Length: 184
Image (tube, rainbow, N blue to C red; front, side, top):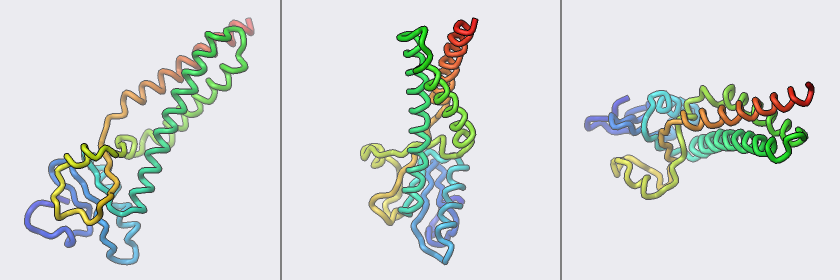
């Protein structure tokens, strides 16, 4: 819902989205289902592809930050295990004891990332912790009610997706070739 005009934010039970791509999930405890309301507001902001999302409710903000961190860890584990497998294939070319488990791990993690994370709206967002960047976000001073909100910034995930899929595919191809040569 557009937050323009002179209307007070407290009048809305919907997420506050500005035309500049800023969404603010307000910490307004109005009614018994406030947690579900915050979740719906966050989903609307994520679906709207806002550039910045500011989450005031601590529980939703922490939950979202943990979910994004889990996706980041999954991505990093995929890349590290795939690269380790590739390196192991050159260090020990005739021994697949190290390479095979690392390749399997990389391929499984790529599959898990694709199934569990790829289609989630949070995949396009990262947690912004840099105070300089946060202070540059054009937020009206009277809008925020907390001093430490969670700030999400929309970032493209195309490069990271290509990276971990490529590393995983190369590790699998090398492992398959080594296995073929070994069996032959």
